[in-house]
Image (cartoon, rainbow, N blue to C red; front, side, top):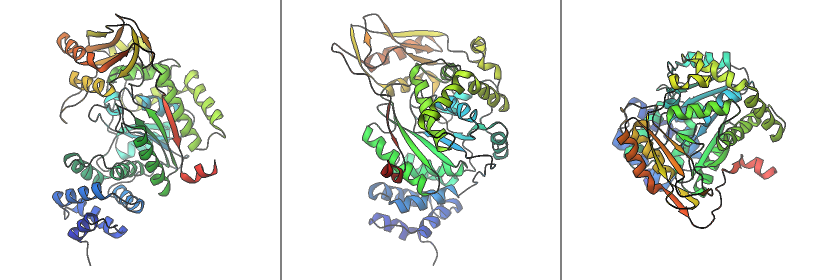
Length: 446
């Protein structure tokens, strides 16, 4: 008997569990059009309300990953991929990919564009003149084989059924489902061809998961689901209670990432980049201890090999490798010309930064999209001059806004004035990193 979409919807509506063959039938129906959007939407709401078992998530992830092309990377070592759940000022991928590749570990990175108030790696790298972020499958594989790394936008040929489901989730208020989030992320990672994954799961006002407990739950699910499907993984929990680093904005974040690749840059961006790189090195079994792995990563940053690999990647993808020279930034990575500031109106201590509001302000300036077809202004930016727990004095510059027009910059500054909270009493700083989650069997042994 063939697949019956009505029975499939009824099973989840009534709290039942799907078989592998039924989930495969559902995904096949999405691809051949026999399952209609309104039927898939009904099932999504059922899955949102009733939830998915680990077996169902495993079946769905595999079926989604196999709905299109699956990268088969050349067998030149254990390859790793990193996925961030998204944040504001998160330019870590720009540091991490060349850093890990410079250590001889292949990195095949498929990245996305900005989503909502969070930035996207593709948009950031497209700040570099000539940079091609739409590699063909063959070019992607060849580049990873030859120089050890590549970053490209997601191909429509990879996990296309997941793309259909994601669109429907977006318009049916079912995006927050933990099970659907996990299957979406892991199916695309598997289709991307890497052997193992490191997940950067963020919590806080500027993250998908606003609570720490929610981030733990998602991280646990991502690790267990990936590992059960034969892809060793781990999740690092990092804070998005305030923007990462100093700058938010496409070209500005490329500049900051390059500073870190030069052995400089903000300590927070450097610390998170090194920690995630350490976990990728350990996952690839290129070091025998966390300390050894961290030392390898520090030497690659401070010795220049990571920066050199970034230049190789940029040139290979059609970009101008001179971007690694700061003297070229005004020409190759120009920032918007008009400036406005938010200043402290009283003495005290920084008690809170509305990270989401900063991301939304950048989007309004043109640094993100309100509609899918909107162009990106790579030069607009916001510089964060403060951090939670830091003492401030009346008149201190807390935020610096760079806009295309004076009016736009001043309007953003006026809006962001309410996004900062100053306390008369001392405030503790916010920890940058939380737990690192490993497969359960490893936790049990430690």
